[in-house]
Image (tube, rainbow, N blue to C red; front, side, top):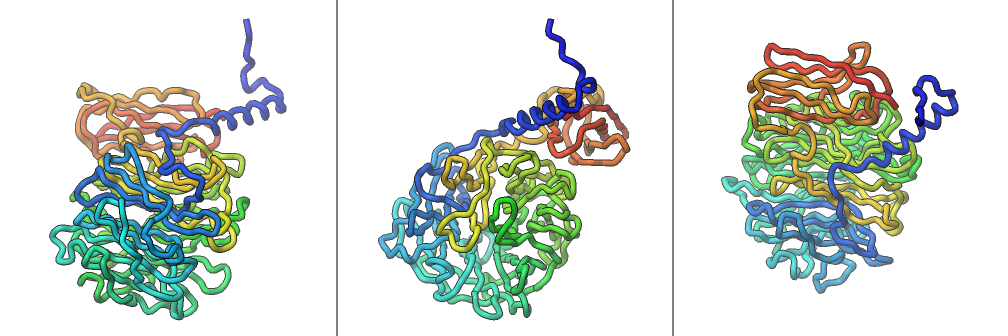
Length: 542
């Protein structure tokens, strides 16, 4: 019979080999969901964005900045069956000169089902748009919204039927002339024409207003955020600005600094030597639930608590329409200051009021590769759970011809549609940057009720497997409706993460804890609901 020695009896050299093997095997663990290329091709695809139809969630429109040699354009990708199949092209075929196409795509589907695509006209030259009335089959000639030195446009549409500006589509961007403000334009006729650019903020001396993002709230108010970025080295983001228009983008109420930041902008993130940024991204709860109307802004930060010494994902929220803002919340749940990197957050608030953040993350990797994670909160951002969603890791690289040293692109994207999350990211594990996506049913991640029968008592079962590395499942029976808290503590009694903090109906539930970012040792998991509290012990062995 083959005997396997206890780990503790092995000599140090063998222990190291075992640890390395465990790390290797852990890095091979598959994601929870399948990954697909949205439009396989031989062209470079970066900077994906995606939107859904306001009234038909089976229709979605995605875009990307596409590069083929010296040619630049915007990919246009469509689904009419809720993401099961996609069609489209790496080029927005408009019949007009390719010099009017140059990235930073902003896809929109307006109230009439008209597809609108905003974009730059080349490297920081002009802002333009095209529209389609046949679901992307053909496109209008290019319309010039602004000429000259412009940067980083983002579009959005008013999809609130009771809004006086219902159907109006907006574009915000940075005018790259002193004082480097955020400006806006809108179309009221589906992209046929646009208004002259309208300056939103005055700007602050020594700073550029960059990375503007836009959403329309439940009352039809237009909300815009941007990063106040230093003009001198290290040129990172030091605060977040916010503007709101209550009259359809005509005039704006502005707060140049709603909260301080310390952004991660750099042109040489190591060891990849790539450019990243900490630009803010915004979304608004339109679920009709308890947090209806709350505004959320996510940024990338470091060296400013609650962010650590390495890039982290940070969330701030407003519960009063942007007048006041919360303190910052660190989203990613790996240990603080562990030398791991999270960047390029994208945000979408789903129809249930859950906050979902997509970002790159290398917490589980000992090499220089990268994963893709989603963090989800169901309590307005107080607590979070993290999930790896990519099946293949990749090594970030700069893209030749994308503009600027080290440019990997500036963003990734996500939307909630047809009861699923659709994250999009750029990944070059096949040898060329392509846009990948997943279709994630919320029941496939996080807490899932695994029984409709009502238990007759409150039970916390032993986790399985135990010992475990790096993930384990915790199952419990809840015989009544109540607020459930499930937390993990280390051997010293310090809380290390919160897995559940929400009201749940009676049933049997299963929760997964992925402890890849935590050290070996004894941990305790404790659940409380109503007047009941139960606790069990488990062992993480790496």
